[in-house]
Length: 104
Image (cartoon, rainbow, N blue to C red; front, side, top):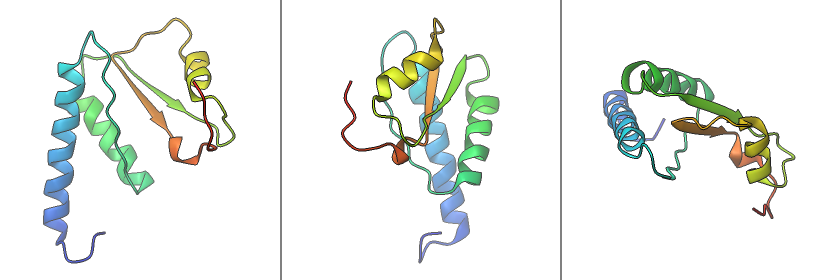
């Protein structure tokens, strides 16, 4: 939790971020859009992803990809997991644990 911010402020900020993310995904359908999101707490991330899917993106095909910590080429790792599937949104998890020096 951020020092100096009451829990109600943090909850409101999280809710606004969730709505903004849902709008960004919905408005970018049919075109490439890169949105980077960071969540410091695993349990909060899972809750927010579930709410995003249930409340804001219920009609969209969403795919989650978990990257192994030893991945060298992020593009290839994602491509291999997607096969021929082209989802409406792709959530790449654990990208902060990838090795530096990634090439496309």
